[in-house]
Length: 349
Image (cartoon, rainbow, N blue to C red; front, side, top):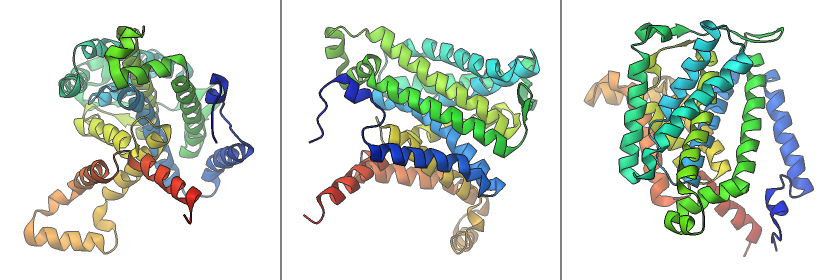
């Protein structure tokens, strides 16, 4: 029987030699991936890794603390613009600019967390939604950030190492992603993580037991915003050019969809949800190029709808997936994994 007798067993990373083997195999495969795939798939991997960082931070807020946010595109934009402006306008090195921009995003997250002390559910969602829309409007009106024309992003310099290819950027990004995932996993297992979960399950009972609700709710927003800021800073180097229209409401909805589809309150859910929806997002952008499906959609649109609307089919697919997940598997992809693992452990009985 898998019984934990003390907290050290709960926080240990590797529970058996089998876990050590598969973790080493996975990490080794990730670092060897760029040597066996084309440049396009390296770009896809970078895109997925960035969204995994955002989904991990958002899951801390939504899945572990029970607070809803539709404004993470705003934190994402702060990270992207903050990193770029610090490097371009103030000549700040990358290793200082990226965490500094993320800390600025965390500061805004802390301020946004203050209304969360009195707001819940849809009211909190509306408040965060307003923040996300306001940030992009403000950025678009400040000349320092390039205004509506946007701003070009420089190459990354780390000492004498100039990162100007997708492959080199991948090695930096995957290392950062693994570090942030390990940090979040350990954070959740600590006293702080248990406080977040207690607030999610019963905030009044948690406060009665001595949990500082004010501190932990605002801290959850700050940490989640920090992760979004880091991801936004890295995303800027993928695009090489950023503008306010990049960070839309649909981006915030997509971030939330990743967490819901993957599974609330699960690290594995954040990873799988982000990977699935990112892959679908990239594939459905060129849905007319998909064999058979693209031709059928084109004929259907020419007969009954507008062909220009086919480009928005991805949002219909995302919405359908979310509805299906909520109806048939509330725990998301992680719930499917749990059921599959349980089935094979008890097979054939």
